[in-house]
Image (cartoon, rainbow, N blue to C red; front, side, top):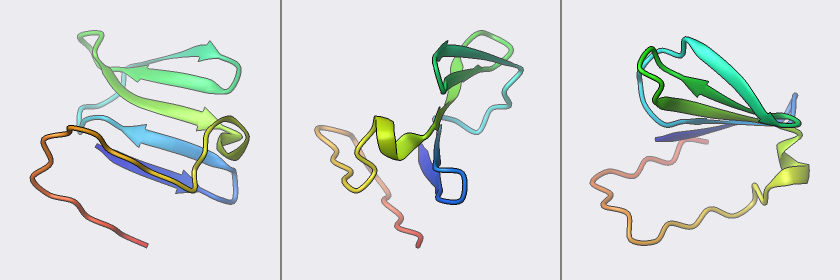
Length: 72
């Protein structure tokens, strides 16, 4: 899973998998969910992210993490 924040557009994209998106559905204003060919969620795009979520803090609870990478 990867979190990608783009400050120039204030958008946050959450990659849930490496699979390719073939369909996108806006589930609420400015929130788009991307699906693969089997209907599985592959990513979430949040426009105006700083107004919808707290992008300054990231917490994880009980995730089975083998590798954590921080890229600035």
